[in-house]
Image (cartoon, rainbow, N blue to C red):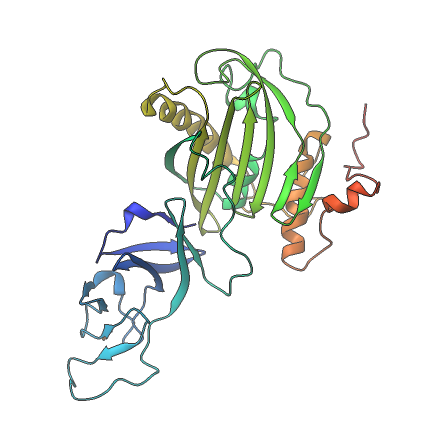
Length: 333
Ligand code: FES
C-alpha cells in the first residue's frame, strides 16, 4: 500500500517512493496508474511532468506516454512513429478501502482482506499517515505485540504498575496469513470513552506489511484496525490506519483520531529506537519469550515467503492434533 486514494486527484501526478524506488502515481478517467519515475529517453523524472489528454508528458523533451505506458509522440519528430521500446516502466496498481495498492513485481495474491469493510454497522475512520524513520517490518511487528501496551501506552492501553501476565495463545497460518487466538489485556482507557475494559485482541497478519486486529471490548462491541505500512526503503516507512468501530457513535472523529495519533506517536519513538534497523529474521539474533510467539512466527513466515525456511503451522495441521508451535527456550510456567 502506498498512498491514500484522495492524495491523487484526477489528471495529477504524485511522486512516491516504494522499496527504495521512486515511482509516480497518476490518475485519468478515475483510473490509477503506478509507473517508475523515469523517462528512458534521458532519464528525467516524470513526476516533474504533467497530464495532457490522458497522457503523461515528460518535462524534458515532451515525450507523451499514454495510459498503457506507450510513447505516442516525439515532439521533436512529430512525423516519426515511436517504437515499442519507447515505453514507461509500469507497475500493478489498484484501489481498495480508499488506498492505492502497488505491486512492483508479479502479484501472487489479491489486495489483503478487510473483514468488516462492507459492514455498515461499523464506522470507518482513517488515521495517519504516520512517518517512521524505521523499517516497515519493525513497525508491523510492533502493531502485533500486545506485551508493550502497559509501558509504551501507560495508563491508556495498560497499567505499568500492574502489567498483565499474558496467557499463552495460538498462532496459525491460514490462506490469508497469520492469525492468533484471543489475547486478553486490561486497558484503563480501553474503549475510547474512559471506561476501563479487559480487551480481547485477535491479530491477523495478512501480508508482511499489512496487519489487522479485531478487539472485543464487550459482548458485541468491536474495535478493528487495518494497518498498512508503506516500505519506503529499508529504514523508512509510512503507517496508514483505518479503524472500524461498531459502538461509540457519540465519539467525534477528532476524539478517535486524537487517541490514534497519541498511540502511534508513542509507538514511533520506540520503533525508531530499535537496533538493528532491519527486523532480524534469524531467531538467534534476539531473545524471545512465550508472549513473543506472534513475532517469532511472523519472522518465520517472512523467511518462508523468501524461500528460506519452513512455513509456520497451518490451522488444518493444528486441528489434526499435531503439536502446537512453541518457543522452546522458554518453558511454560
Ligand atoms: Fe523524457 Fe527526453 S528525458 S523526453
